[in-house]
Structure formats: structure tokens, C-alpha cells
Length: 267
Image (tube, rainbow, N blue to C red; front, side, top):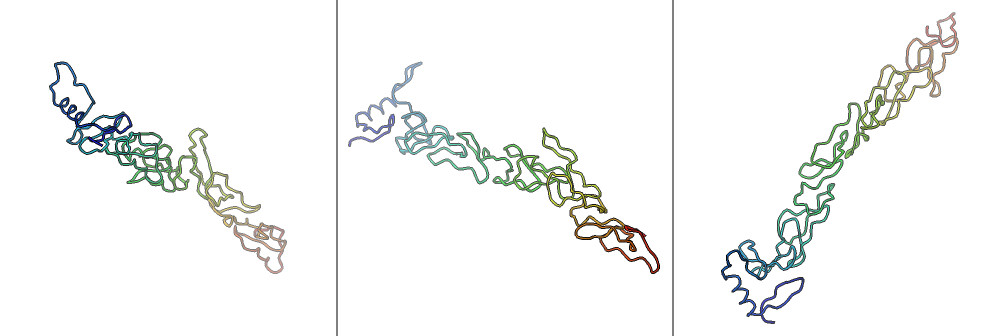
């Protein structure tokens, strides 16, 4: 086939030597005042002349490489150049594929030009997106730092909002804002305990027992009152003739010889 092949309107056609000569004449003729040269539109790319053969596609008669009109698009050589899809980006001109966002990040827009467009809830940007540490959260996509949970509360890693913050063991919700999901955690009162991180109320100790401090985290912190002793996971009154003066989980003591006491005696 004579001539060289170029791509025009999506089809290959042969250009004869005569047509090439005519194109060269048009390229070098002087433009009239206020006028424009007729013929295929062309522009210089990296020191060579390129012919526009269809929207967003340019063909270099020297290199034969398709150059995307703007660097947000990609495509095969002398093929249609299309916008990078959501979750991808491309920062330099050329026919290479768009780059996928790194792990744990994405975006919903097309034709993005930089990796900084890749963002995700619950993640913060270092060199790549990394999950928020435990005890922190991030509500909106972006490069902002993660936000710490309120004092005496915690969250799992990669949390996405304040609703993920839970009062730590030994603490219960004092105030909870239904609109902002913000909370205030307060130490469980005497006589109560909570062994897990959650936003439930602390559990009360069994009857006739209490804790010796606030913020207790285990049922084992519940101690039988004076005059009561542990029995089958409960606190039972010291029987007659015995006593217990302290707040603990030991058995009642017998009264001294030739003495007597009523049930639940403390002395």
C-alpha cells in the first residue's frame, strides 16, 4: 500500500504521496491577513507536529504515538482517550493506564490527576492511607488527622464516627448527645461494676455487698458487707454466734467462748 497510514475519524486510510505533498504545501504556505489555513488541525507536541484525528485524540506523523489532549485522560495509541474512572488517577500525559488508588482509599470522581484525590472514611493520610488508631475516628474523607474519642472512652481501629467511641470498663455514659453522638463517660458508682467497653450502665453488685471504690471493673470487686459472708456467689448473713467486722469476702468468725451474737452481727 502506497503512502503512510494515519488514523482519521476512527478508520485507517492510506495517504498517497501526492496528498502528503499537498499537506506539506499547506503547512508551509503563508496565512492571509486575518485568515486561517484550511485543512486538518495540528499542533506541536514534544517538538513534533501532531494531527487531530478525533476528539481528545492526536496522532504524531513523526512518532505515530497518540498523545492525550489533557493528562486526566488515557487511551491506547491512536484510539479514543477516555477519562480515568472513579477510584483511579493519572498525573502525566501519555497512553499508559490510570493508576488505582492505594489500599484502603478511593474516590467517586472521574478524571482525577493526583493520588491526593484518593481518600476514605476512618483513614488518615501518611504516604498512603492508614487506619485511624484505636481510640480515634474520622467522619469525612480527606487528609485530616483522626479525632480522639472523649476521655475514658475508646474505639476500634479505623472507626468512622463518635458513635464508635465506647466507655471503657468501669465507666458508664453520663451524657449522650443524640444529634452529635458525643458522650461523656463517668466512673461507675460504689456498689457497681462494668467489665467491658460499651455504652451500657454499670451492673450492681449482689445483695449485701458493695465495692470499695468507684470505677470497678469486675464482679470480684464486690465485697460482702460487714456481718455477711460469701456463700454460693451471694453474700449471706453471718449465722447466730458468729460475726464479721470488716468489708471483705472472708467467712464470719465465731464469737468468743461463753458469748453469743445475733445473725448478721458485726462485732
